Each structure stands twice: as C-alpha cells, then as structure tokens.
Length: 188
Image (cartoon, rainbow, N blue to C red; front, side, top):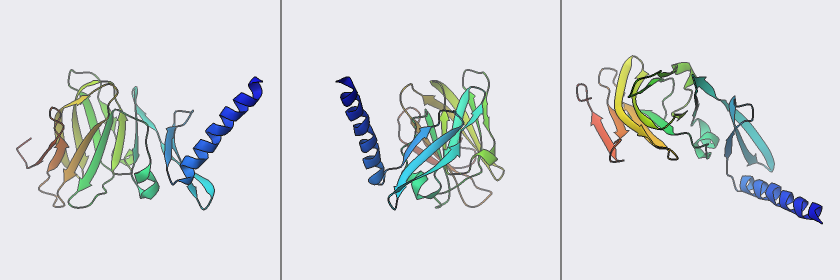
C-alpha cells in the first residue's frame, strides 16, 4: 500500500518540476559536486541545461551570472551578497576584480576579473560587516560597512561612468537599504 503512495508522490514532484519548466521558469541549483551552478529550462518541448562555474576563495563560494535571457531570468541559490556591475547607461559590465574584506579583520575574499564573466556576482559570505573594493579598467570603487545578515540577500550596485577619469558608484545604503550616489572622486 505504501508503494503506490510513494510512486504517486514522486510522480507529482516530477510533474510539478516539468510544469514549472514548461512555464518558462529557469531553475538554478548548486550541483552535487559543489563545482558549478546548473541552469535548466524548457525550449521547444525539451529540457535544456547549462552551467556556471562555482569558484572558491578560502571557504567562500561565488559565481558570476546575468549573461543572456536565461541567466537573467533564473532564480538563483540565496547567496548572502549579490553585486551588480554597470557602466554609464549600460546594464552589463563584466571582468571586474573584487576584494571583500571582513571589517573586523581576517582573510580577504579575492575574486579575479577573469572569473566575473557577467554583470552579477553572487558571494556566499557569513554574516557580518564587510568592506568591498571593485576594480574595472584601473578604476577602483570602495564601499565600506556592508552588513550581511543571516537568511537575507544583500544587493549592492556598483556603477562606473563611461569616462575613464571620473568613476562614480551607486550602492545600497548598508544602514537604510536605499541607494547612495552617485558619488564622485574624493566623496568615498
């Protein structure tokens, strides 16, 4: 008697999973290997998949995304920090080097620009205050006092002007949750 019930439950899960994909949803999950983020969606009646590399810096995992319609519409695992990079009026900026330093000291998380292939960077940090620096084409943006809370995703926007000599940034206010900026040189 238990077998039909288990089969029915498992069938329901598979059907629900397929229905979600049929509706155009893109699912994103960390692979069992813990080495990539797997994306799956439906296209022309078949399941399509791709993957994004999942990197590590010490004990901190991170990945970059946001290239193409599928990546931009996916629902990602809830990593504690999401950083969005832009330049001028362009909604896409990649190859940004990032350093995240715990405000209380300790080992920094260093993310090389070649591992940031899209405009979104997801970082799985433990709760606490952090200072962040992001470098694009030699121009550095610094954000201090970013507070990461347990169970919540903090979203930070970092923006450069298109002109190389005048960077600005727009960031979520760590205390108020609103936007700060644009701030010019010397206002950091």
